[in-house]
Amino acid sequence: MKNVTLVAKVDLNTCTGCKTCEKICPVLAIKIIDRKAIIDEDKCRGCSNCESRCPVHSIEMVKREEPFVVGIDVEKFDKEKIEEICMNAHMNPEQILCYCTGVRAEEVAAAILDGARTPEEISSRTGIRTGCTIECIQPLLRIIHAAGIELKPIEGGWQWYGITPTSWDLTDEVKEKYANKGFYFDEDKELFERVASARKEKGE
Image 1 (cartoon, rainbow, N blue to C red):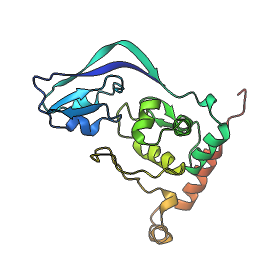
Image 2: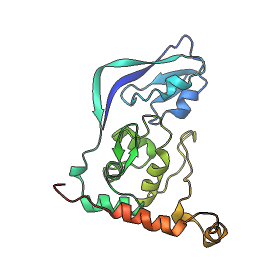
Image 3: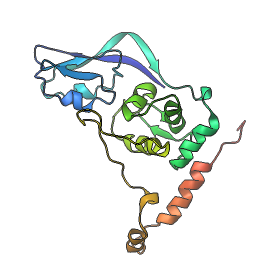
């Protein structure tokens, strides 16, 4: 869960409408209207990505008058379905995907079961990608794919990302080519599967 205490504010006098902020917002909270950046404060998750990337420094993060918490209660969803999605993605449900916000794989799976279908919708509901906005997009996409959801570019295409291949995607030709160069693809897969299947004993 993430405690959202900040919100982006735009100085409309200096904003040039360059669309940089619109392109990098992980929850699509910014739109350029009449060549000015307009923030949907209800959607903003306070990541400050827009502030740090604005080329003319027209955006600043300010404290919210009423902070709120973003998160998914995994206990409200079918545990077996959550585990199925996570295992299809070769992930332990308790595995942390976003180190900035502490969002775990099970929370992302629960958000999908709750109806979220895009990275932006899942980010808005769980807080994932609202820290650095960089490192967790790949595991997020893997879980979406594992849930059987086919992603299509959103309008404008700003938030479209490709999935990086994993050990499960490599061809036998690639494995053979690098077999004598210190790579252990099949062994890594076996280890990852064991980690994903691991369960903590209750009470420990």
